[in-house]
Image 1 (cartoon, rainbow, N blue to C red):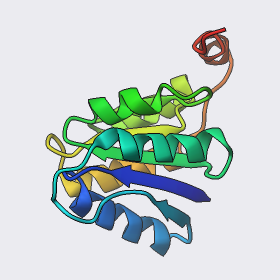
Image 2 (image 1 turned 60 degrees about the vertical axis):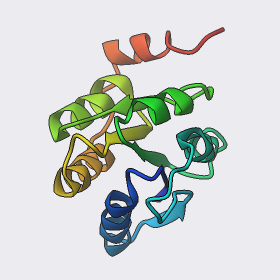
Image 3 (image 1 turned 90 degrees about the vertical axis):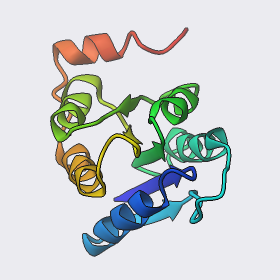
Length: 143
């Protein structure tokens, strides 16, 4: 799989651990995130990841900021992107099963690095259930 990842200054340690995990599993990672704790603007990284997913350059995306909200809101401005804020692996599974989310948003200030890696693994290995959920997902995009 090809996975795009982006983070602001709240997430360099999270990104590093997630990238190591993904590469160990044989995935290709497109890195749009910062590697420092110097203040940066999360929309710059959220848009980059969402563009990769929207344009088919990545199968899935991962975005990380302090609360996970700002970068998810940014990513969700893109057509065909469904970024889900997740704080536990059960939410990550439901985001895939019920919402066909294609970007996971991680709140670095409210989860541990280990939780983040587990959520990403769950997100990437959980399939969309379709059926009644597909009907709902098809109503999300603006016309």
